[in-house]
Image (tube, rainbow, N blue to C red; front, side):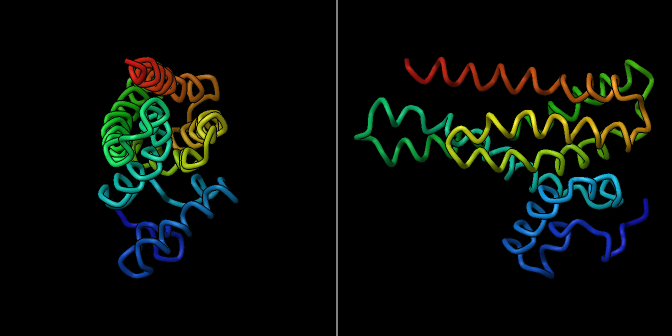
Length: 191
């Protein structure tokens, strides 16, 4: 597996050179401003670690407000609520990152369109999840979910060289899990 050249690498992959926060901010800006970078650059090749960390950070943002919902019911427990929010965000995002890549790959396999291994699909999905950073803003997840869905479908169609309907179905599979997980935590937060 060849590595992408430094010129074409995703900035987060060069975090040790640029500084992790600067590399994260540069990647978010790059993907949100010019999403075509995900299929123009060779993002599905390279190390798995940085893309997993990136996915965990951006997908955790989508679940922060879900974890903070119990604070509205009991504002006297601020520290516990913040700790709970962090736990929920990271725990749910960890499950979503791996399940989403697996669900996406299963749909691609079912239609005979999986041209890349699951690990490379996970890397593609990690960077296509960038809009989830909007989850840090109240109700930002409502914008992030469809934006990430469209971005992921386009990336999958180009990277796996499959038809648009198959890519849309593959991108839709993890969205169903996202909706179920969010609904579960919202409904159980009131207990």
